[in-house]
Image (cartoon, rainbow, N blue to C red; front, side, top):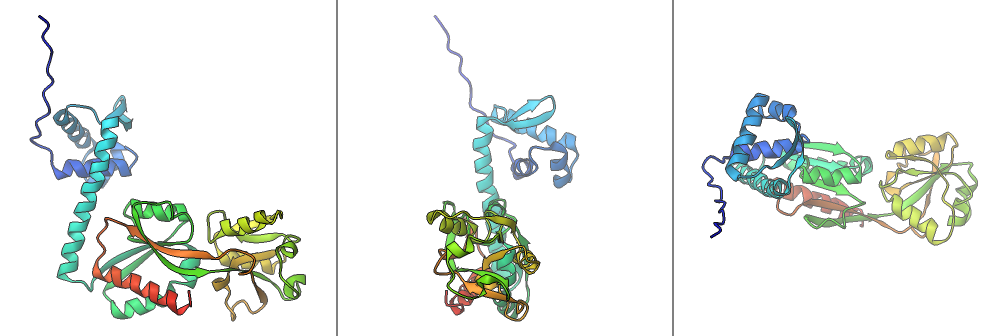
Amino acid sequence: MRVRSVIKPPIFKTMNLSQIELLRVLQETDLNLSKAADKMHIVQSAVSRQLQLFEAEIGSPLFERQGKKLVGMTPLGLRIMDEVASINMAKKNIQAMAADFLDSNRGTIHIATTHTQAKFFLPKPIVRFKEKYPGVRIYMVEASPEQLINQLHTHKADIAICTERVAEETDLVIKPCYHWHHAAVIPKDHPLSSGEMTLERLANYPILTYSFGFTGRSNIESAFKNTGLQLDITLAAADTDVIKTYVRLGMGVGLIAGMAYDAKIDKDLIIRDLSHLIPKSSTKIAYLKHNYLPLYSQHFIEELLAAAAEMGA
């Protein structure tokens, strides 16, 4: 008679939040034991020991190893990491709720955004918000659209303000903020300073505009592609001021966000509206669906939407 072996399920006795936190830190540090130990303020041998205890308690390895080095996650490890992320979110939400309950006029907002939004849209709502909430600190991180979303997922930002690459995200709350159009900026003596502005005329000149993925660049490319015209981009930058600098040097026609033209600072340049040629772009406010937003953060979003409404967006 064949006896079938029975594997007993693990009995969890010592699993604690410190071990859960260690798993999160390891994920943040790309499974680097030394960096994780530094962030946890413990020695590396203690990190290794805690991982061994955790895996022994679970009854299965969570990490792929080469010697003592962690090189990847096992299938079970990947699934557990999803739960670790949920636990970490709950922990942060509990802390945020408690702080909000004790004092809703004091705290910190981390904003992830692009240079264009930071310079040309955010100043007014931030100034008005600070008048109402002087005890709230604002930290701003300028990044690419791809990095903006990552800032939310890694909890380095509470709110992201962006134009591109956000519609496909399913775990974000996305609020339309305002619409805007592109414009051409050129020296006063440029041939395009007068006459009807068309894509055909623009296509005759070198174009200076935003780097791919920034500030509606995809809409610019689509407009030219749909008319079968070749887009000759000789310089691309994330910073509008850089684009205007090289327009002044005579390198070509600058295609920028219309709001980035300053009538005082840029009085040596002519702006030509392109709203009839290039599709409008939409700036959005995004934050994690399951992330608790303190009252002051909700009021900050209201200030953003009010500023957008004043722009006629």
